[in-house]
Image (cartoon, rainbow, N blue to C red; front, side, top):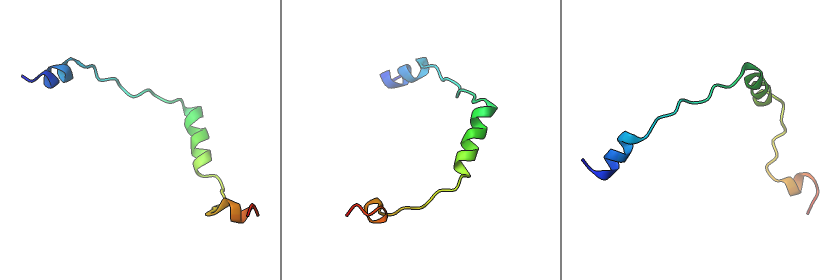
Length: 48
């Protein structure tokens, strides 16, 4: 068996951490929020 396979066999696989519901609700609100699409900040805000 190759050394890489031996290392892989010896590694532990960790489960993904669980996020609490309050955090997931905040993320959901952020994703569904109203945002303004800006392609060129300097043009939009008169920085040129």
